[in-house]
Image (tube, rainbow, N blue to C red; front, side):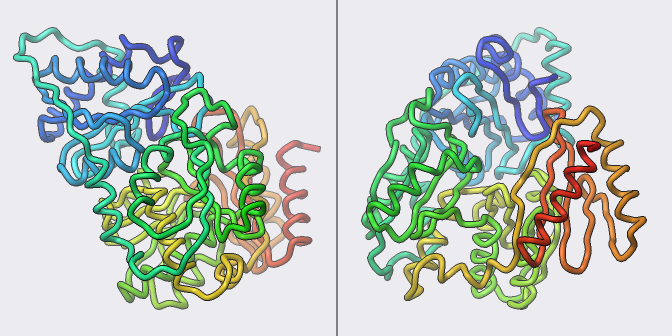
Length: 449
């Protein structure tokens, strides 16, 4: 399996991803940028994993060997790297394996203006250049310099959300020993919140729990802390802090679709009649809320490169994914966990109630969460599922991303993983019992039992 994935590069440190590989990828990236007539300076950021500065050094050497200059912004969250690429209008590379365990690292690359690079938009070309090797050409070596962007990043975030008249809130933040431990202090020192910090020490070995808040077990400590401190809200960031998950005052996980709907509601109050993007495993409530507020809801495939492309094509002001990624037109259409968190805090401080009360209007359905099943032939299994439901009648199907089966009171999506032999199932229905019935039925078809 190639370490060039659908949206980034990711692999095991020293086994799949090495300093030599990073040098070769830096060379290949520069060649690709030259082919795309991009600016001849690359912005490089890195997370707190022990291998990140080593790999960033090697990548930078590869880039500068091709005559390109490099700006090193040092420790950064992925959304800070996107900010730098947008603000400076230069291509960028971020050294991170996001929420993956400690033994992994990776590279997220983008074009100038923080435009995404996915498999169809450049990664295949970069991979080809790495595999083939690059011809040796005598070039003048580019210059590497350092430039801190953290204060400018915070400045920009605080121009996008008005937090000047907030009521006092008690906020617990679990950084998971990831990059929010670096960015959150820079943001919250400017704000009037009572912040309780959890796991802010930068440690790429993740001694407390994996920095993967989509797995409920990694939210247990945050949930306990919110209840113990009688906090108004809990924020959990993943390793590179481009995703944010919320815990309400009861210590319960907030459905990411409810947060998508809340931010969409706020965005449409500012820009009436605008377009909002949501991915196809988001709750039906997102589309309903957008349309109730006079906006246009556009459904997307799962994945940041698809959502960003669709935002550019439609002029959308905001996009949300059920996986905790939130995209903002005024943040170069890039995803920012911190900006999503600030919107949630602004909305909560403007309301007179609790977070669960605020979000009640957006929680309209019962959902299964994502369920993974190991399959040897995903296409064959999806065909079997589609045939079964079409034979029942009164359903519609589509193949925007995997298979979606839609009925009046329920829907589900099954889609193959880009990286593993897995089929991912998401079910939603008007009641919990109906959701469980559909979930059980689909899982039986997947397992063949």
